Figure 1 (spheres, rainbow, N blue to C red):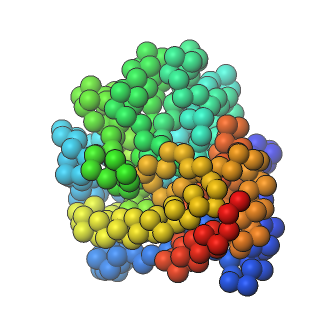
Figure 2: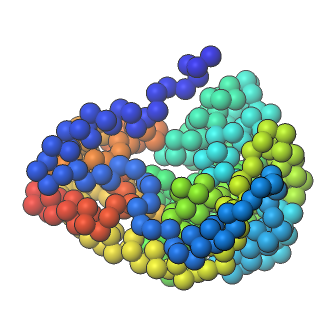
Length: 368
C-alpha cells in the first residue's frame, strides 16, 4: 500500500550534496526553494500576540482573514467583486495540491492534467487518488475524461508566465470538459524583466474567467512573499459552492489552519511594504547569479518570474548536477519536473546573499 509514490525526489540529491560540501569554500545549496530571510517582525508580533488559542480554529477561516484575502486581491491583483465566502485557508499550498483530487472524489479512470514542466506535487495528488496524470500544455489535447487541470503561473521550476489569452483558453476548455481548473499562483509578486512593470495575471481576473468563478480555483501561498514557509500559510479562492464543499470535507477530516497562523496571515496580507522589501532582496540576488550562470555556458529559458533560474547545458541534467557539485554548488535536476525537462537544472535564489555571491564567483571563474 505504500508503493503508490516513489522515494521523495530530493533524497536522490544527497550524494551530490555531500560531494559539493567537500569544496573548500563550502556548500552553496541552490537546490531547494525554502526561504532563508527572517519572517517580518510585524508578522512575528501578530503570531505572538495571538498565541493564546485554546479552542479549535475555524476551518473555513476567520472573517477577518477572509476579508483580508478579498482586499489583497482587489489591491494587488486588480480583482474586484470577490466575496469572503469564496475564500478558505489551507495548511500550506502543497497540502491542498496533494489532497485536492481525493477531496474532489477523483479516482481510477479519471484524468488529471499538469503542465509539461510541472511542480512535483501535482503527480503526487494523482497517485494518491489512483488517477491517470498527463503532462500537456495544449488545451485542445486534454481528454474528455479530464476531471482536474493544473496550471502554474509563474511556473515552478521554469519561471514561465502565462498570458491572459493562454489562461483564458485553459479555463474555456476546462468548462467544456466539466473539469475544475486549478491555478497554482504563489509567485505572482515576483515578476522580472518585462513583468516588473506588468501585473502577472491571475485566473480570477475577469479577462481570464469572464467574471464568473465557476469551475476555477486559485491556490496561493505566503511562504515566499512573506517568508512564512514555516507557518504553513496559504489559501484558496474559488466559486462559493466549491469552497463550501471543500470546507465541509476539511472539517470532517480535521484539516484546520491554526488560528494564530490565520491571524498572522491577516496582518501579512494587509502590509505590502515587507513584500516589496523581500522582492528587492531577490532581485539583487538574481542580478548577481543570472550573469554568472550565463557566463559559465548555460542557456537560460523562461525564468521571467518566481525565485528560480531554469537553465540547460544541452546535456543530461544529472551530468550537470555532477558538474555543479564539483564546484560546490547543489542544483535541482530537471528530471524531478517531468520528461521534457531532462536536460535542465533549477537554480534557486533562496540562499543568503553571501552564498549567492560565492556561487556566482565560482561560476564566473569557470567557463564550460
